[in-house]
Amino acid sequence: MRINSKGQVTIPVSLRLRLGLLPNTEVVFEESHGGALIRPVVSLKDLMEQRLRKASGVAANGPSTDEILQLTREDK
Image (cartoon, rainbow, N blue to C red):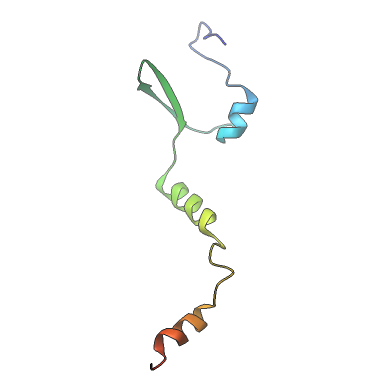
């Protein structure tokens, strides 16, 4: 891979797909240990949505909210 006269490089498709670098994705370059790091710019809103999607359904197989409340309110 070479940098062209305009300072551009082509990121291979497989890498773009793996990293979620879609058209119009904003990226940032950072200097890192003798090289450069490229990463997508993620807004706080996008970060929260990603975390919520990842956590969605995690406790789906446990007791319901009503069952948990009943257990915590029962006299022992």
